[in-house]
Image (cartoon, rainbow, N blue to C red; front, side, top):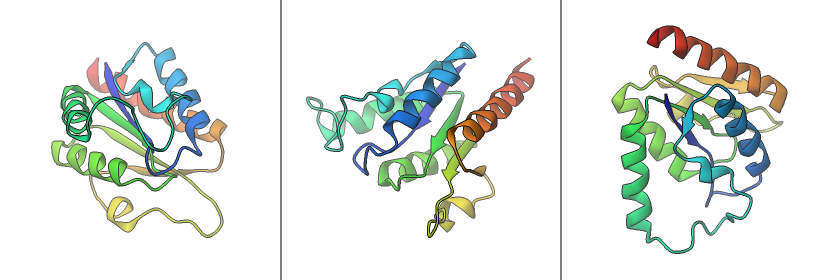
Length: 144
């Protein structure tokens, strides 16, 4: 199964280590993560060096349309993640959008209020990985 992982790049890289652990966890299930670069520690907030914004946009949309499901971590606000969630929402893709709870922070109502996006709050990485487990086990049951 192909999974599209969403996480902030140009919106801030504070959660890069979390993305790294989440993606490694998803791959333990044998899934291909098309956006594995989101977890790359060498990738800074200015984004990828080389491809134009247009090439990145087109490539990422191609990957999104090729994917069977998506997992987003929307704890770090990102225009790109919101855009990708909207495209995936229109496609009615199986999904989970994770939001780490912190004092004074709430998920955007444009995402949390959607009937087609499954927003789940988590407190720490351990809890997030359990949520991902439940999602991936549920996906397996849908495809068996």
